[in-house]
Length: 243
Image (cartoon, rainbow, N blue to C red; front, side, top):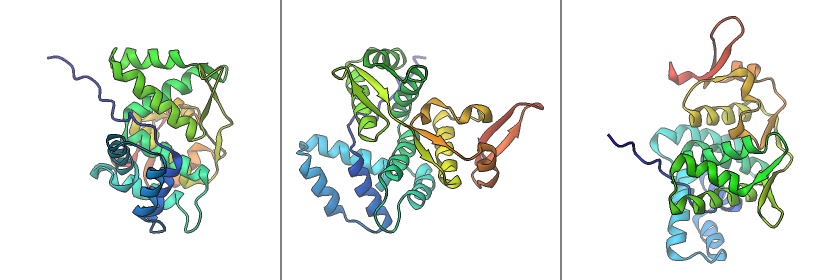
């Protein structure tokens, strides 16, 4: 049996203010007209506009049934009654993209790993890793570039050396335990398995964030997560629903 080719899914640049507008709609503080005005201002073509709305639907407005509860909880955590902070929008957007689009997650994971040591890496390195995983298809480079451009707009990285390299910016400190818990849940859903407690703080897929709460404490107060032991010194964090 020939293995299925991994799907791309996330192949459009998505501006953070579009996600913010969609968040306001879900929170009851914004309207579809406001989102439409932002998309009009971007001068998107008909096809590009349709694809952009598809992404925003998956991330915020109309998530898949199995993600509806997760996204709804994220909206409750990261959208305030007034003006939502940009860093909160970025946290929500990142977590939602990880669980909705594995392709986004893989670009994030490779970017996080490649920039872990020196803080930067070359664009071709990320493209090469994605092509090794998804195949030498012509649209892989285009989709990878769209995700990287999106991550730049969401404040995770910046492009330097005439755009040929990407560089990490200072991580976004997430202090509230339930927000940390939601991001950890996003990473677990993306990876599809339990993860070692000791590595969650530095998992590559969450590279734009830092946590000042002990992960063990966060897990202990989360209704969605649980701590599992595999021997006296190996502890893992898993989704409670996975029981």
